Length: 314
Ligand code: ADE
Image 1: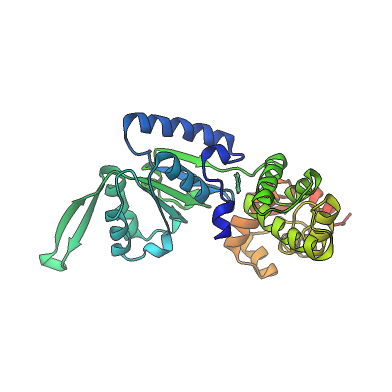
Image 2: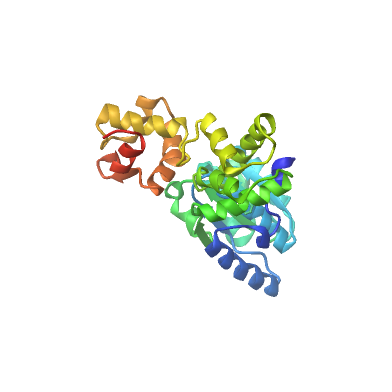
């Protein structure tokens, strides 16, 4: 699949997240020297910043395989037991949205993470018996957009906990240039920079915008992505100069017009905009706060003067 080949295959190809790469480079080398699997790793932060990609890279660097799943797919105990028992020595198990694990799945994970053991209850009531099965040592990589929703016993079982941060425009530019090369799309440095500026600090968005701009340039222009082409295309697609899309602007506008800029509660913003409150909190808010258009106070969210100005209010 195209998406797969866009992912950087090795740590050396991964642009940005310098600190995380340093931490992991040391962990990888130490684990390899000892002939042990990596410590369990918890990655958190907004979506699209490369949590899954990093897990696949770790597997490549450790020369093991990576099984990818998401917490809602592990609802029944046998789902997770089956997965754990199929892991080979040192393999990586990637669980996305790990804050959504069921209680039972979570309790199966504790001994698995700590002692590489699963405890299974067979039968019911009086005749119920617990049997333990040993697992081969493995590495759990958990990913979440909401570290605060993790229970502390689960969080405490990770040896490395790291937050992914938004990417700098220069880092996103490099990512856009790299992806354009893989897609065999001609692009100027300025064209890449324009896409990067509007990608909300997020590689997944940068690559998505690049594909839309590529379509535009092939249909409406010569095919090469220049700054002008990128600007024209992104304007047409309603991505503004700060990278805000229709929903970002709706959230800010609604806070300004209905609540005079706040403070206003999350649920109130959600009903006023018809957007899901969790999506606002995990997808929209983090970037609006990062670029200083929104603030969180103990009384609710407020928009900043910069947001009024950006949307053309006094
Ligand atoms: N493509 C998506 N994210 C990337 C990253 N962090 N480095 C290189 N290429 C990428």
